[in-house]
Image (cartoon, rainbow, N blue to C red):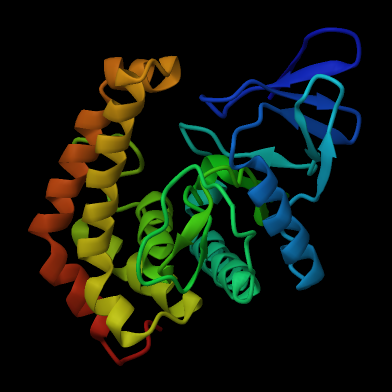
Length: 269
């Protein structure tokens, strides 16, 4: 969704945190201490043959970063039905796996800055926010990830758990985001894990990691709001933190069910 701004700029809405505009075939976004590291990562992805991400083109006269504009639709809430299909879930998992694999071997500069701190064990460069609102769809199919500001070194499961939470989704019945019965959530979670080719250790820890990821998100929201970031203060005022807390409790209650499904050896059919 876009609305005209000034001259050749069109404001792109939906991100919720940054003021982003389109200029022709490019996107212009605010920068941070981490931006040059992210650009180096995007350059590495392109060299590694991963095309499902924008290219970076330096900075404009206003100091904003310049990225490719990727044609398509970015999913915003309430999500369209095509985002919730099994086919989308499989494709997203493969796209996340391909992204992670492409980051192996990326060597950041010695003075590299990240928006989020790295986490051990470092296996890949996590996207940090691989969710529907950072996924470009064309004709109802996911084709690319955008908004790599939250990228940071970490374990695969840290990203896998959050992306599964968003796309399955692993939500409490009190969350209106496409609530499903627990057994159906578990089936879709298994579908996601299979498509990603998640290993046994990852399957054993996925549910707990998703809960930990939501706890981390709530802490981050409050830290950013306390630091004066208006977007996060607005999210808290809207009750987003309480939704995440409820979803984290839901994951705790049903972790055994999710883990049992993830460990099944029989095909889903």
